[in-house]
Image (tube, rainbow, N blue to C red):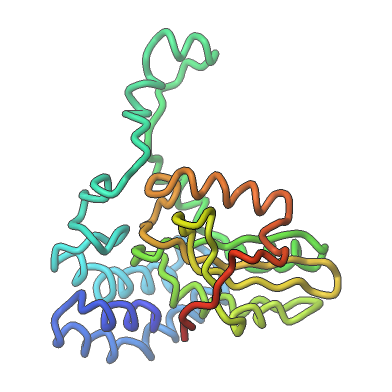
Length: 247
């Protein structure tokens, strides 16, 4: 909850009265979140309560001030103004008879299924992520710098809970460095660490990107994916330059 307050305050997204309401709701928000996480059921009273509070206090005022939750540079539904990749209408394309026949599917494709979304967002994936690191695997966490709903402050706070065989939260304390694809193409600010069991963890704030960085910076995201897969993201890259430190 405090991550949203920090972003809303720093970016002046809402009125002072709404900032005060966010501050007043922090303790209640933390308590409700802890209660929800104790027995993680999406439809439980505790989880519905935190969802309602989250929407009312931390999301709706931002939307009400005509700021997109997914890209703070624009108004709601204006995110596409900052897209460099325009794939077209996927729902329209995939529901063409000829395409459905080629894919061998009969059911209608829907761009959003709320039941699937709830099932996807229901479980706490933190233990699964920690288990990957405990197994010595690579993990990359990426957030768009202009994204409010999944913002850097909240993500870094959550990353402080990443503890298993090793204290993986120490990556948060690393000095952020600027990751460049080339001399003129900045990908974002990255923190990274390699642990004694071979596990590799990195967090990157993608510059000039919102909730869907692959739409804002497709070339950079393709480059980042390749750097993650081959492990070069954790190598000593001379192109990495020290940058600002997020609290």
